[in-house]
Structures are given as structure tokens and as C-alpha cells.
Image 1 (cartoon, rainbow, N blue to C red):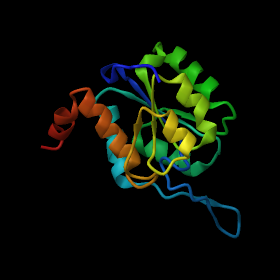
Image 2 (image 1 turned 120 degrees about the vertical axis):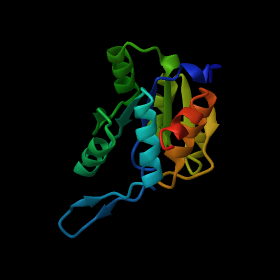
Image 3 (image 1 turned 180 degrees about the horizontal axis):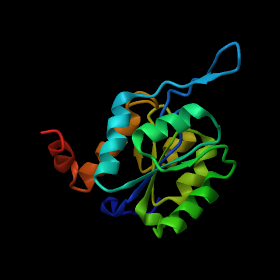
Length: 171
């Protein structure tokens, strides 16, 4: 992992299952899928966006739950049903006019490794696959779907010297 100045990070890219959720896939008798998202993760995402940064979701699965949650949080860059996450991230970085050094990724499992390699700063959730945790510059204490996204955002904002500014939005 190259030595990246976290202060440069402009884009946070998230996987969904195992990162924004605990990885459970709940299906009812009709095949409708349900996902459980964490409210503190949502607040962290809103703070990141409110402070002027980008968030993207790049996930291998597809579903309306992700579409709805992304809309609620103001996430404009949502890619579902992705087979090559690294390639999609590369295209998004080019579209936004960013450099890989300005991108952080939060991941949990093997399909995320190409996306982690395409980013300047790779992070893993605490309960992620050992290969993903080994490839990460930062590993959260919290597991996916249980505040890991919020923890990663706090880590980034504190490293950027912007955490006090985030807190001031509430006071």
C-alpha cells in the first residue's frame, strides 16, 4: 500500500453487503430482498457529503433497497451488479477528474480486492476477510453493518483535520 496523504481523499467508495450491512441477505417467500442499514453509518455518510466530499457505492448485487438507501443519504454515484469493481472505480475516478491517491475504499471480501488496489487508500471492516484486512492501510474495530462506515469516516475526517467542523454542524 503506497504512503498516501489522507488529507487528499475526496472520494469514499463503499461496498454494500458486509460493509454497509452485516452481510445478511434476507429474502421473503416472494423473493423480495431486505437489507438492514446502520443509522450511525448513514449519519457519517451525510457528514462526509455535507463537508463537500464524494461517496460512491460499488456492489456486485443489485436491488431496490440499495437504490432507496443511497437516495436517502444523497449518494449520487451508485453502481450495482458490478463484476469488475476495480474497472468501475477507475472509470468513476476519471469521470470525477480525480487521481487514485484521492480515493479511499472500505471493503470486506475478495471481490473488493481489485477496487482496493485501484484506490490510493484501502480500508477494511473489522470482520472482513483476512486477505482484505491484510491489503488495508486501516481496519475498523467495528464490523460491517455495525458502525464500520462511520468509524472509517471519522478516521478520514480526523486525519484531514475536519472532525471538529463535522461536530460543529450539530451545535
